[in-house]
Image (cartoon, rainbow, N blue to C red; front, side, top):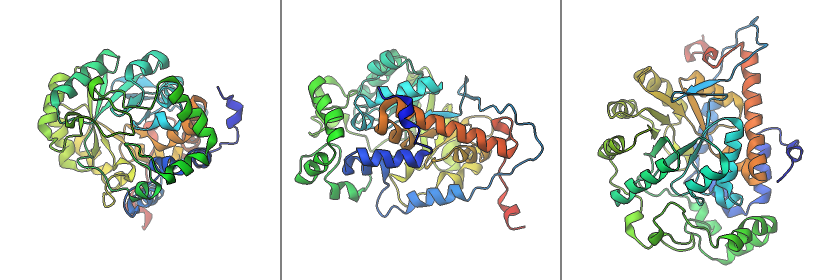
Length: 390
């Protein structure tokens, strides 16, 4: 366990990013840090967020600023959810458990990935966190439904369907770095690991000594393979024929809250509502999938207005400051998912590192609200675009 004082130098998410970059092999760091193709969209996400101006009210008593939120019927101290990420268990030993513990300490949910290296059963038993479960639909729908039953039995009451990954994205830097999932041995990757001995010993060698080569823990036992091998069966490959009929099937089978992640069109948001979906996440997958996709800030206001109070709206992609959280809320989001930011934190120091990032974002959000004269989250207002040039 790393003492919290060890992270005193981490003053913002970018500091955590630099710490993660020093610790992780280049191939692994770029896998979590970068976008796709020419990475136009990842830069645009940042520019679009920066362009959102918030409207401060003066002479407001902000002695008691509240960041409390209610997400899917549950009150929590921050309007945040830790987003699902597939390789947390590679950036830190038992990284998913470390992230879940940080979430539990912050009082926010942690969303477990279908492609998690640690099983939801272990995460639940060892973290004490409120768990959501993220789903990629497999070709074999029955095996997918069996996975849903497993997630429910482990205590997850919210299901998040990732809907924006119909095909594998084009990430050329992975090929150049010799890194990808499944892991493949190469001289370039071996040299990369050799240059990062702390990670090699603390993560990879420790995993080999305790549980062997990492696997996707939620795949059926007979098809579970090491990350260095292709899957043994096409049955657990990601389906390319996912439609709204699958959402209908999930709504019939899943007893808890149902969320669809990756919505960027008003009509898709309305269709989700008509299928009984409880919430959507307006997201371009952190600019990791489609380089010509719009940023969530471009479509969030229209989507939030269209669904009104009939369905909760979350947003993600590109959060680096507490002000970014405030921006998404001002555009109509009820809550915000964060992915890379807490991955940087867990990479630099496990639960303590992820907790430090959450503390920093929380403090920044409170400072932003104080400067805005916002006593509560609902008081955050944007400057309307027409006013910027008036």
